[in-house]
Image (cartoon, rainbow, N blue to C red):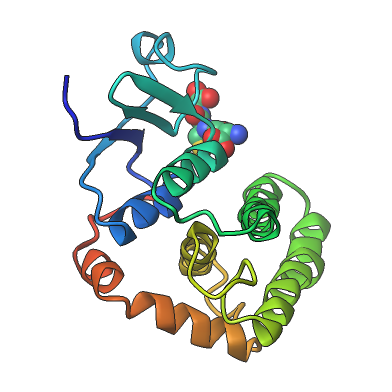
Length: 198
Ligand SMILES: N[C@@H](CCC(=O)N[C@@H](CS)C(=O)NCC(=O)O)C(=O)O
């Protein structure tokens, strides 16, 4: 069995790009498996029939947030104190409240789409901005955690989701995004990122 972990997802950023970026930041080599679809054969091997799915030796894990936390906990990248750890988790979880709302609104009414644009996105971006006005790092400690990388992944995803201008009025978020994008391993990854569909 391969000792290199395997992350299985679609050829999309979606729920996997933050994990890919966390692995990249930590310089962990991994098999980046991108499937076309979840076939019945694949589905039968997945804990909840869903992707992303992570295999590290014999250990198998579903649920994107748990995968990110697992990798972070294993590599001392989850925060130092209990408070830092749970603030990292809370931030990481908050990202999906926005991204899922954007995805859902695509099949909803214009009023729902407008609410996502004028209420949901500003509410969360405003909260992340406020946090970064007080703290250099997302989890409030004195060093990066996986939550910084996952916030970057969400900010980096917004243009693809049709909200390229969303961070324009948030100077701290813009500064933060540029700072993470300039970390050498992340920079190199972004320059070579495969053509990723969604
Ligand atoms: N809560 C799960 C949700 C996973 C999820 O919804 N995965 C979707 C793709 S983003 C999926 O596997 N869809 C295919 C299917 O359900 O057959 C997580 O965060 O990992």
